[in-house]
Length: 199
Image (cartoon, rainbow, N blue to C red):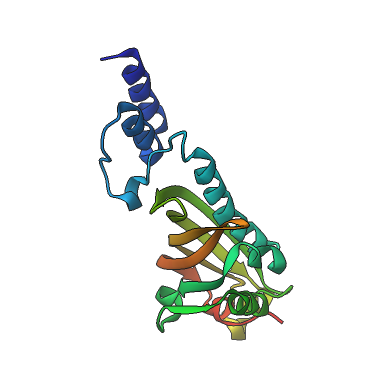
């Protein structure tokens, strides 16, 4: 075993997870050992900048929503976006104007209703030079003090865990989000807070 392989195996032991596996596979010149949604593409020199920008864009969306920076959030999308939040809200996936998505979010998350999003385990897969998909895990909460009233459920907090799939396209302005799916795996707390728009 070469010194490089020994070092990479030690890194895998220390770091664990898909990131170390991707580094190990890429450096060894081997084929992927897991499906793209598990490991993503190995980060190589040719795609490293794109990979970093794609992760930055998806993370920036969470930060913009929590800050209620709706112009900043809108700037991260293509003009039309395919969305699927059916695991939370029912219905069917839809292709809608990004302006409509932002209007819906801003109407729900007013000053009275706060949010917090946390995302990790990014796995980026390139589907060509100008298209990529990102799998990630996410956690979020919504908080609204009205929810603490007995008649509204007695709890100001609602939480959700799940997985995200973002589709990104390269545009003249850089990478932009063209599709977004959230699949809830667990929820807890007050559904009044989830379902009631802030005032």
